[in-house]
Image (cartoon, rainbow, N blue to C red):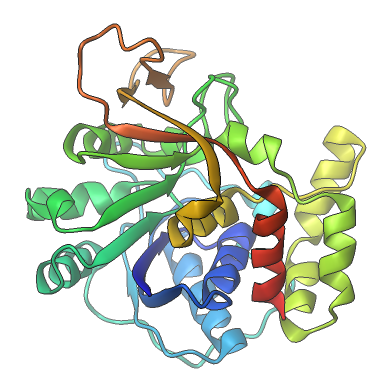
Length: 307
């Protein structure tokens, strides 16, 4: 069984990825660390505690960075709601977060369990950048790092070329890619190629469990956004893809490893994840870029998490 830590800016898709993780027999979630991103770090922490109420699990939650390394926070209330969970009125948890900062918790947990923990980052990478500055050897102490982030073909969702998690703290993302020996990437393009379709959603909602009702209620704002933008009914399973592939890499059917870095400047290119697709730079590959997976098994993993 894989021991995992999820670093999260807990919006609706983060919450669903947590349900997917708790529904899998292949993983044990040993901690959550929270960060700014989809919503404030205070909301991300509160939302993670709400998910723990839903699954009735006791897992420590460590609040982390409230803002990017250099810039100001950039939230996504227009799709996640003001509270990050679609303003669905999910009751506030009575659970309390840990007092230790997320970055220090990452250092301490990895140091106490070297090579044993898989780290999954599904928000901006600020906590990771701070943690590796506290312990330069940190990247070698985790068994793996999987992120939801990047637009590897420059088909952005926050600007023309960048994906939200990378754009929001491009400096942190660049620092992480410079230090970690290998990062598994589930990009925005992977999300667009592996949607939860209308048929999938009907299947999920028909379960009529507390978890499937939670999914229904917290995703109404994003479903309205999708109808307006695309005149269709589907969901973007961004974070769910990252968690699923980290828990069960056998889902992956196509991948490539290349050198990748992040652009931190430029008027139109900030947050761009540029990939050396032809390996022309001579730099060592640092990114395992996931290009396809078994969609049927992925959808089943999500369904299992909603039961």
